[in-house]
Image 1 (cartoon, rainbow, N blue to C red):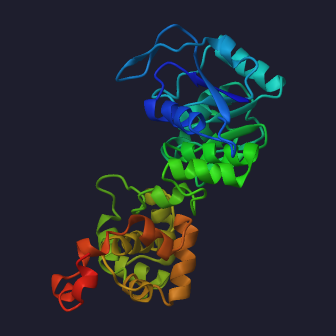
Image 2 (cartoon, rainbow, N blue to C red):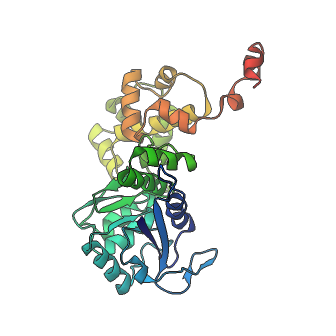
Length: 333
């Protein structure tokens, strides 16, 4: 039987801790046998888990002999793990143990050096901190998980579930993984990456920025076909000055800012209306539905239709009541 050791570090995030425990303990093989034995390990007899105190049945010695070690996220990712934890993880890696992190669990794993030179991910909100503190790691904030073979990392919260299902599929095949996914009420594979969950409004600008009036005008005119020259003319500056000011105050270019604002408005319309993709493309200023689909997928990682399926309101909650009348019993169920 495959043994999974879940390492509960101080200030462990309960959601990240419970995900692998639930997924792996419920996994069954075709003959009904359990696929995994799960150990919960901790450095000390009691571990602070925020809302409660955890008493793990295993110490760091529980990591030895495990086939897989999971490092859940903690509420204090900037706090490095102790020497004992680092040594235990390095020793396990040297023995060939598979090691995976969930959410900010990438940080203690990064502190061991096991991610040096590798691609990795973490929660999108912490990706900048990971890249800054560990420049030797190729941080990819847009994916749900990264599989480097022996070392795996996942993004925030539910992405840990994606990673667990991926490992089950690696261990026992798609049929067992699909059954585990059904028990978790999850698709075996989700489309897209973290990008679809990041709130993409225009980049923040310092309060009182000289661009504030121009940004407000752009937001009000997303449906217009605007060129760089149009924007510069409205701001009454040269295109060169416009580009420089945007770079200084927003960290991006005028057209990139405009594209992101349009995509954010499109997300809002996909979530709250039943307008067709073609109509939304026109509403937010894209010259063609094809250009809109390409830009939307490049920005969010999924197509407009997939985004609407994931985040759109249920039809019965948004459709005009007058539209429901006259559709008969089909709309009343």
